[in-house]
Amino acid sequence: MSEQELKLHVPAHSRAGIVKELTQQPVTRVRLHALYFDTPSRALVKGRIALRLRQEGRKWVQTLKMPGDHPLSRIELNHPRPGPSLDLTLYHGTEAGDALAKITEQLEVCYETDVKRMLRKVRSRQGLVEIAYDQGILRAGSIELPISEIEFELISGRIEAIFVVGKRWQKAHGLIMDARSKAERGDNLAMLNQTLDRIKSGKVEDAEGLNAKAIAKFWSPRSSQLPSLNNQMTIAQALVLVTHECLDQIIRNAAVLAEVDTLGIMQAGKAEHVHQLRVGIRRLRSAWSLFNGLTPLPPREMREAIKPLFAKLGGTRDLDVLNETLLPILRAAGQPPLILAQDYDDVPANELVTSQTFQGWLLDLIEYTIAPPKELPNAYESTEAEENPLTTHSTALSKTTVQVVPLHAASNLVAPIQALKEPALKHALIGRLKKWHKRVIREGLKFEEIDIEARHELRKRAKRLRYGLQFAETLLPEVRLRSYRKELANVQDILGEMNDLAVAREHFVILRDTQPSAWFACGWITSRLEILTHRATSAFKTLSKTEPFWR
Image 1 (cartoon, helix red, strand yellow):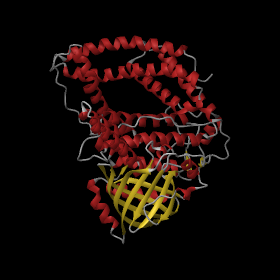
Image 2 (tube, helix red, strand yellow):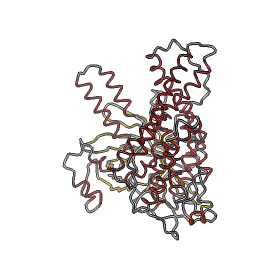
Image 3 (cartoon, rainbow, N blue to C red):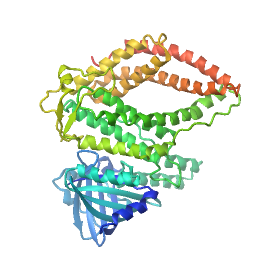
C-alpha cells in the first residue's frame, strides 16, 4: 500500500489555532504509543526501512515503511497484532522481506513515540484528505524531543488535494516544512543517546565539550549530495530528481534555523546552516540554468520568487564571515582595536525561513514537481539572456502549449513531452557544461584585465559550472573528472575569498572616517586581493590545460 502525505511542523504559537480549527467539525482522538525497531548496526535504516509496533487505543498494529515514488510518498504495510510482538514472516515474498531475511542481528527497540492524535477528514474538489495532528514526545533512552506536527494524507482522489488543503492550513497557521519523518528523528536521537552514554561511562576528559559536539552534530547542517542520474532517465526525470535533492538541502537547513526542535530551549541554527541553505538555493537556480531549453522549467514567477530571500540571507552570511573568519585573521596580522558598525537592518534568518513567502514558495515548488499543471505555456523561457534553447525544436516549442503529466523521482516517471524525441541525458548535459566551461575559460584567462563587476559575474559562472558538474557526476567518467573538478574547485575557492574580502572592505571603508584603525584593515585587504588576483590568473591557466571531462 502506498501513502501520500504532506507533513508540516506546528510551532508553539500556532497550536491553539490548529486545535480550534480542527474541532469546528467532529474529530477522532486517539492515543498512539509506538516502538521502533532496528539492529545495533542500524541495518534497517541502511536498508531504508522503518519498522514499528504501535498501540492504537486498545489495538496493536505492526507497520513497515519504505520510500515511495517521490518525497511525499511512502510504501506502508500494516498488519494487526495480538500484542507488542513482531512477526517478520508477514513480509515473505515482498521486497521488504528479502531485505529483512539478510539481517543476522537481533532486532531491538531503539526509540519510541507517545502522542495524542486528533483526526478529521476534509473534502476538496480534488479529493478526500485526512488531517492528523500529533502532539507528544519522541524518546530514546533518557533524552526526549517534542512532537508537534500535522499531516495531510490523501485518502482518495488526486494528489493535488493534499496541497490544496495543506497550503491553506500552512498560510492560516504559519506551519513549517520539515523533511524528517518521526523514524528519521528517532534514529538520530537514538544515536545521540548512545554517544552521550559512552561519554558518560567512559570518564573521559572534557566530557562537557564532547557532549556539546555530539549535540551540535544532531542538528548539523545538511550539505549537498549527488543525485543519482543515469542515461536511461529522460531529461525531465533528471531535472525532478535534481530539484528534489536541492529542495531537501534547503528544507532541512531551514528547519534547523526555524528551531523546529529547539525553540525556547537553545539555538541550534548557526551561520553554517545559513550558508548551506544559500548553497541549496544557488544549486537549484544552477539546475534551472543547466536544464533550460532542454525540458520545461517551473514558471518564471516561481523561479524569481526566491531571489529576494536569497539576497537577504546573503547579508547575514557576510556579517558572519566578517566576524568569524576575517576579523581573527586581521587581529593576528596586527589589526588595532576596532568597533564594527552594528547598523545592519537584515531580518534574522529564522524570521526569513518561517515567513509565509518562503514556506509558501517551498510548497508551490514541491507541488509543481509532483503534480504539475496539465499545460505549461512558454515552457522554455530563458532564465538568463545567454541561456537560449539549444535546438531548433526547443525554440519552436517556446511558443506552444506543452502537455505534461506528473513528474516523480523514481523509475515510475513518465516523460512530459511524449511527441518530442529528446537527446540522451548525458549528451544533453555535457553539451551545456562544455559551453559553460568554454566561457569560464575565455573570461578567466583575461582575469587581470576585467573589472570588478565582470569578476563577480565570472565567480558566479564558475560556481554554476561546478554545481552542474555535481549534478551530472554520475554520468561522467570519474578518472577524467577528478583532476578537472580539483582545479575548478581551486578557482572557485580563490574567487570566493576575493568576493568575501571585497564585501568586507566596503564595510571597513565606511568606518575609516570615525575609526582610523580601519585603514589597517583596508590596506591588508587590498594587499591580499592583489595576491589573490595573481593566483586566480594562474588557476585559470591551469584549468584551461586540464584534461576536459567530456572527452
